[in-house]
Image (spheres, rainbow, N blue to C red):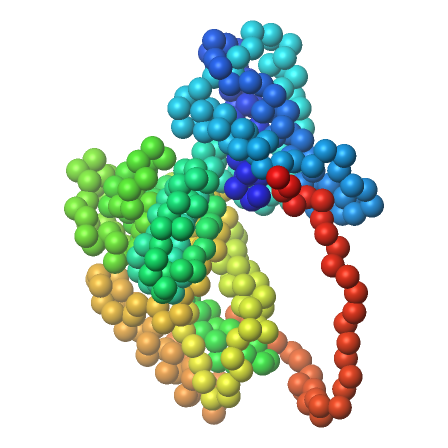
Length: 392
């Protein structure tokens, strides 16, 4: 369902973009074979989603539920447009203008409920990640739903039987036309009440190849050092990029100064990463093991959109802390030393030096209630079946 809905949003963005100028529209909407009713279908599905998010779908049933066949037909034509440079079959300027206007209205209406609207792109690419894997192992970038299902069903290794399918960010911020992500550490010293420490330094990991949405090779799209060290840097790369594909956060801040975006680090990127970490950990707090006198260091991976807003990709337990490059050789050594300062020195002396770790979040809660076992709690009722479920 999410794949199909994302494809609908992508199609509407394509229609608006192509109809924006006469030259584009003249080539895109003529002499093709793709029926324009798929745009109507996409608008209808997005409108249904908006109704769902606004809870307006509760009191009424949909007259004609969307079937699996309808989705299959839509995706077939969507692939034609996106991956095969297909065109629509219409010569009516009035029809083109109507499609564009309705699509723009729908995109405007869905924006509050689609936070990554501007950075997701239009090709509807997805990442397939096997669970419990590290260093980018087994991650694939895929174009179609059929490819995703085929790949997942083909996994027979029990350890890889669980997986995550995640929307790929097609419009990331690039540095010299090269993709990068940010590895940011944080430390949890208490689960209840929750206490999170944020490290004041981080580092960037670059791809060895120029960015492309045509070539899906891992050397272009997966920035993990464990992946990139297996490839030779492209001869077409900008000479200002690091040979070992890593920057310290201070180098990145200098780069922002050079391009006139100095304020983005303190006003957008840093606050966004902090907010993402706190939100993710709070959402997971109930599932975390609460054990006194223990701690855990995590590595959060962020991607920046073209608007510099950080997007949390994943959080890693036991992040790599070895000197894989000159940058990690410096930051990992000081980072581990500062972990000791927090978990040993600060525990007994609140004024102790904690290095580059700072308190990010300290939960203020009352004492945890102790249940005696004589409480009789009961939840009764019947599940509400949504008409939004795809029916055959």
